[in-house]
Length: 263
Image (cartoon, rainbow, N blue to C red; front, top):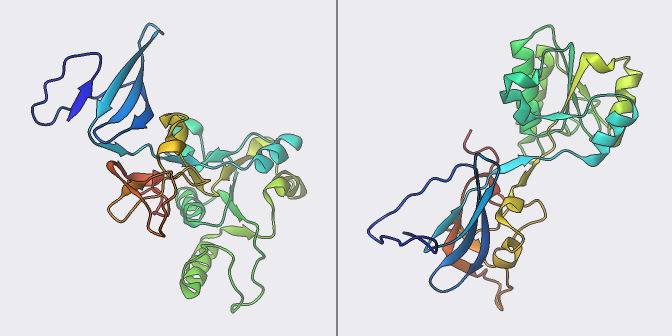
């Protein structure tokens, strides 16, 4: 059920409104409603602002790739183009993979998957996976990729990627990527650098009051109770979290959940 302060609501069953080009800001929540503010961008460039109240809200604002500032500065300092992200891979206009070299910075499953897909699509493409951890020197050493995965499975994944011709460059901080490319003799016009070091929740799109309403982690993702109800921002007297009865959270913005769940 959805009620708007700008129009008379017909409270008969479920009312669905789809607002394209609309930003939704969460303002407050009480015992009866979650109060929202809608910013609707018109085609003529103007903006219409309206207030709305909903009995139940699902926050599914999604996430976006994290790009370390040190990586941006390192590439800029050595004359390379700004880094792209794994999201850019899905847009043909980005041209990811059309150059002779692709360096993916990161050690998680998004980095490994992106590297494998790029190499399978273009066998002549030089693909480098760079990360901070130290490269293993023997088959029994810990492989510093896919943190939290079963070690034997990690070794299988690494051997599989090596078999495709993918290179691994360990012990490389984000701030040293530009220097590494220079040392490798890789020119600016020949390489795409792709950041794959994690994702952030899109909490900024929900307004400044959101952290005062729900519990938001440092990575911009919202803590949830067992039924995916949002955890309240205020601290509970007991160890049990206080759960919002009217606010649920779904998708990439859920803290501790698997990323890119919709994909």
